[in-house]
Length: 176
Image 1: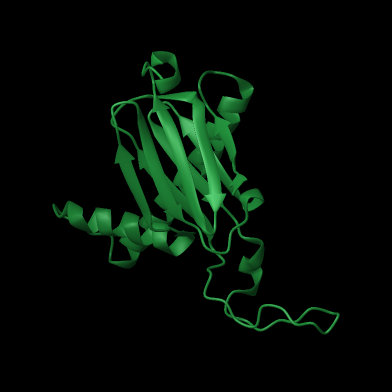
Image 2 (image 1 turned 45 degrees about the vertical axis):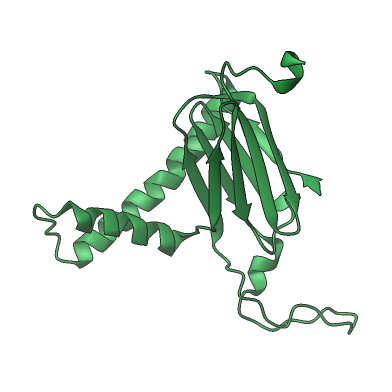
């Protein structure tokens, strides 16, 4: 089991602004792709907002790999599990915001997606992989604010486990 980097955006610091700018860039890419899809349908959304939602979801799928995940909530925290096969801890980043967790990643093996390759020493390597070459992106909107300083992330056998304490929640250690 290995630790995964957690970046915290909990104020107006330069680091927080950098994180928010990066996320805004991602959302701008999705927005632009969704608009391209809208235009390709003739640019007529009419009163059917489901087309707009479908365009947004398709844009996400076109640009990013959205992994399967599970979000559980207790009185004290949120627990998130994300399937990230083919990723190492150094390839992943968890971003903790006030009421949101974002998981981003780029796999080193993604450059060989769907292709054959061998290493130079003749020992072989990845011959084929279904792991996508798209950037991994998964966003979790939470019902309440979290304590961004109390977010941990660990990777074990392709499963990323994130625990985020709710803001103001008493830890079990403090109760003992």
